[in-house]
Every structure is written in structure tokens, then in C-alpha cells.
Length: 205
Image 1 (tube, rainbow, N blue to C red):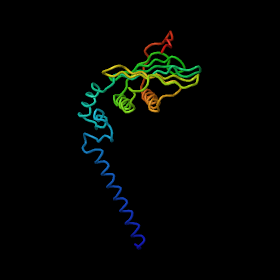
Image 2: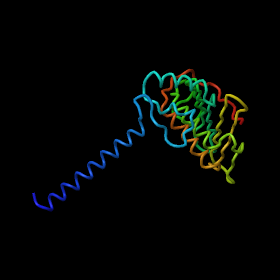
Image 3: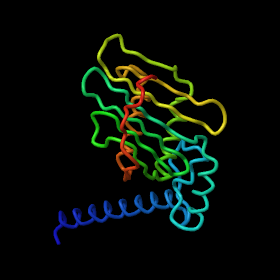
Image 4: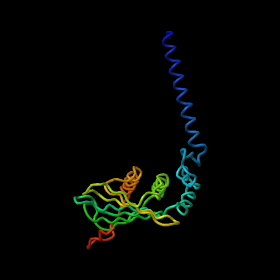
């Protein structure tokens, strides 16, 4: 092997060894043992259960979290516009149940039920905490007409429920993110029809 070849081979071995050590260190930091992972920075202790590996400890932690998470339900209601904006309401609950009411300009019309995973509900709850949703104003309105109104409501285990109306996506950026995060979770749910809606519910807010 030439001198150039030896140097190339040596550099390749050094790079491979460095990558192997870095990977091992990363895994050690993420999984100090088979039963517990390391939550990312800034994840509060009540949400640490999200990072447990499968096993009895994880199952017990999830059941405990279902009884202790700060919120009982999260609701999003899109109330339409002068055009063909979707009109529907969805409630997600910490007990795992979910209900959907589709009214107009949506694929599902009527009442449906489904199941939400606790992991998804907990991630939404964590974002609600970090965004400071409970301290948002009750309403935000764009200074124009013919736009969509989105109403988000959160019911805590203790204290008063919080409802925020957002017209024209004029609220804080974190409100916009929360609205879309809820919709993303809803898209994963397998909905089962309950019954059809014969009379359109009131549009009163």
C-alpha cells in the first residue's frame, strides 16, 4: 500500500471510529437503561412518561398520567366564512374519547366518535402549557371581512375553561400552531358514524 493509500485508510478508520463513539454516546444519553429514556431539555416532569420505553413501567406511568394531566378536554370549532370554509366541531378528551360534528363543507357530515391516543393528547397539553394558551385574550379579530373564525376551548381539571376565538388567523403564532396541531391529531383518528344531523345546529358563538 502506498503512503497516500495508508493515509486515506487511516483517515477513514478515524472517521468511522469517531462516528461509532458519537453514536454510542448519543444512545447512552437517550437510553441510560432499557426501561427509561431521557426526555429532551425543557420537558416538564409530568410529561416525562412520554419518553419511557415499552414495558410495565411505561404502562403504569401512562395510566397515572391519564388521571393527572392538567386538562380534561380540548375542542376546536371551525365556524366557516361567507364562502366554503369548513364548518365542524371536535372534542378530544383525556379519557381517550373523541367526538366530531361535521356540518358543512367537510367530508364527514353528522356525528362521529373515535379514540385519541394519550400520547397525542399529552403532546397537545404540553404545547398548551408552553404556549400560555390559558393567558391568551378571549378573541382576536382581523380588520377585514369574509374570513374564517376558529374557536379553541380547553377545559382544565381545576379552574375555569378557556375559550379563544380567532378570526382571520389574527391571534398569536402559537394559537395558529395549536389549531393546526389539533387538526393533525384529528386526522389520525378513525371515526365511527353515530347518526346523521337532520337540523343544522345554531351558529351562535
